[in-house]
Each structure stands twice: as structure tokens, then as C-alpha cells.
Image (cartoon, rainbow over all chains, first blue to last red; front, side, top):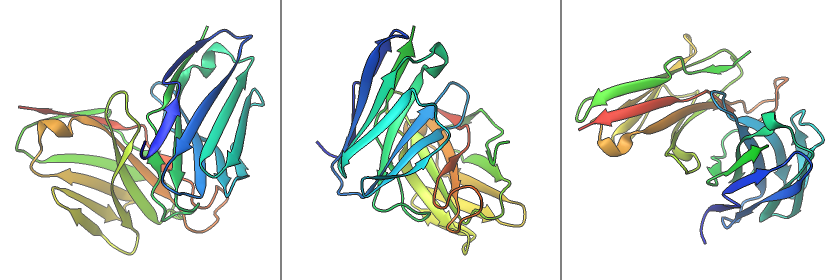
Length: 114
Length: 117
């Protein structure tokens, strides 16, 4: 595997379910990100991890819980979501956190909350 | 309020012609700008970037122009090819802490480019 991978690619869940999204980067990067893309909206940054430490939580509701066990893996744990949380969730990584570091994106997980 | 705006949701051009995608930004602290391309069912892929110390950056068929006084950048694709059909996102970031977060990418909503054979 190369680049940034995400699993699952599609997920349908009820509002009472608990599920997790997984991201893995094979680029040796030190920063990882979760983004949300809703229909007709720009990509919204959710969380930033740098060297496995969460450095930013962009006012995301607590029903989204990130985890970064090592520099190659990032998880997004989901529980008691709402239908408006249905969106494309994208993971990205970059060499370092900072303005001049290009971010590499995974293919995303298309989440539907019923 | 959106700090990065792509006011054209879609653009259609003929193969071989020039495609011009536009992007405006409001925050004068932004000093690094990027364009990403996204095909359906794939994540965005980096295309080209420009630092605020430059006004032009070229990479093959792709050129990005930056007008700092107008807070405007544009992506030119010449000649356009059917494989260029995708959604193009403009993004901006600031190297200094500005009240938003240093280094975070702020994206526009995207412009869907269709290149017709």
C-alpha cells in the first residue's frame, strides 16, 4: 500500500451505533488530519495531530473522538451521531504541520447516518 | 464567513482551449496557496502551489497566478484535456499565527471543470 489509505470506504450507521474510521499513511509523515466534507460546503478541518499529539480540535462535537496511537495511524471513533453528520470524511497527512507542507489525502469514507 | 471563495461552481471548456479557475481570499495573513484536484470517489490530490513572495508558478500545463493586492489567484490549464475534468479546490494557509491556526489549510468550495472532447 502506498500513500494514505482509509477504511471503510462506505459506512451506514444508525444514530445509536458506535463505529470507527481508520486512516493509515505510508509516507513517514509526522502530521495527520481529519476533515469533513458536507454537500456544497468547503472541506472543514476537524482535528490535527502532530507527532501523535492532538494539537487542534476545531470545535468538533464530542460524539467524534479521534485517536492517534502512532504516527502512521489515525482513528475517528463515532457514537450517537446525528443525520446531519452524514458526509465524506477525509484523512490527510503531511511531513510536518505548517503552512508550507503539502497535505496528502486518502480517498475518504462516505458516512451515512440514518 | 468564508475566507477562501471560489465563486464559480462549474466551468465547461473545449478540449485544447485554456481553462481558468478563479479563487479569492479575504485574509491578508495567508501567504501560501495551493490547488488540489479531486476525481469522484478519490481524495483530493495536490496539483500546484505558490508562495506569496511570487506572482506566478508554472508546472507543465498548469500555471498559478497570484495577485496579492486583489487577494486573487487563478489556475490556468493549457491546453485543457478531457482527463482534467474534475473538481478543483483552492486552499490557503498562513505561516504565522493569525487568530485562526497557523499552517491549517482553508479550502474553497471547489469548481467542477468539464473538458469536452
